[in-house]
Length: 376
Image 1 (cartoon, rainbow, N blue to C red):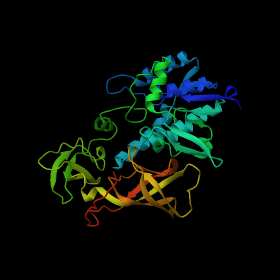
Image 2 (cartoon, rainbow, N blue to C red):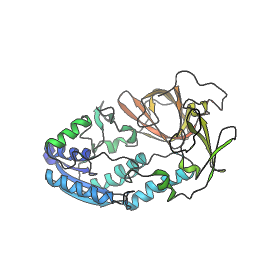
Image 3 (tube, rainbow, N blue to C red):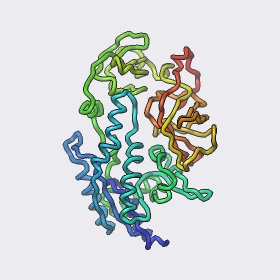
Image 4 (cartoon, rainbow, N blue to C red):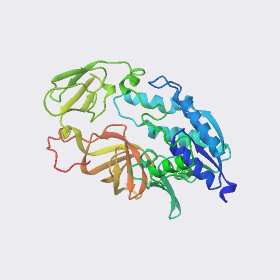
């Protein structure tokens, strides 16, 4: 069908990216409806109800473009399907990624289903990625602007959902998105990008976690068991963390290299290249392939990354059965933490990903020196 005969619901956050996504689709002739999600009730650390401010921006932008707009409340769904798991993982000492969970459970599940029930032909978002038909199948493709690519957060989208999703700004660099907004007088053209936890925003993170996880004071110790300081709870720290430890003294900076949650001990060592921070492999579960299946059965080679800003790393992936994968790295990887996501790529195609179940033994545990070449 021609765009004029198709309806697109655009997930609008009140930011410049979703504003321009709605504008571009409207210019292409689609019948566009802006839909704002309220997923969090509390004020931010400045005492501002960011959801109300963001919805006001959505209203202004939609009125400027000349499209209908509505708000939906998914606060309970977000709490039940995202936040409860997020807090449970932190209590267990893990490092979850709420943005990935939010995309899986809210944006491309509850929100997507609502858009379809409203009669939409497509759901569109302001994510920096692309949806391309290759060899007769929809593929999740990296954004043109490599510095803004968000496929890492979207690997749980399956092909049936992907066939109904549009990413209007995936072909544009960020600077051009802002330029388009400014040329058209869009109210959000200079608005600062949102950061922090999905829908919750920037926070004093230990203080925020402390509202839901009771403080359990304990010791910072070296791997040899030498106490070097005190902390308010092991749950507040993650593997590889440097900032916020409050540990001084002469020498290289301290880094978190491990945790014993039963004893509330946070293990620390000096130096970014300490062997306890690096490993060669991991076991992953909760596997999600965009196409519904791995690129090859059994085992295959591809690229992967463990963090959003990380460059692609070479690896070998082996299916272990019981829904688990073994991922072996060509170069030692730093600060691999449980409940992170490992996301797989073949050139610019995001293949899918999984949740880190267990990092492999560190170089320190194996009694090995760190090789000269390690992942960046």
